[in-house]
Image: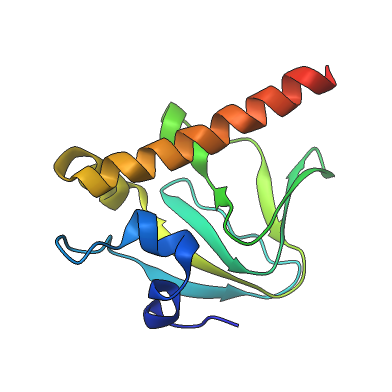
Length: 134
């Protein structure tokens, strides 16, 4: 189980997109949420380190996120509050990045472009899945 930024640095999922020895890492923190806790804020992006998150709308689970998934992308991409809520499905550890820090990274460094590509790629994958289900 990963608990520190050093542990994250050793994890390939995060190393490629968030850390680069030639640049400053994205400002962040590691947070733990207990099972059943609501974890989303409109100004934060989450990357799951360990555990699972259930995305709910109208009190129904509509999607699950697991290790390596980004949560909070809709707020980041569309600049509006998301009507869905995310609940820790079991004890969950996440890497938290403030929206403003992500935007600064995207504007200032190549590593930010890589992060944007990862986020948009995951978002496109979600849309494709939704379209194939409809």
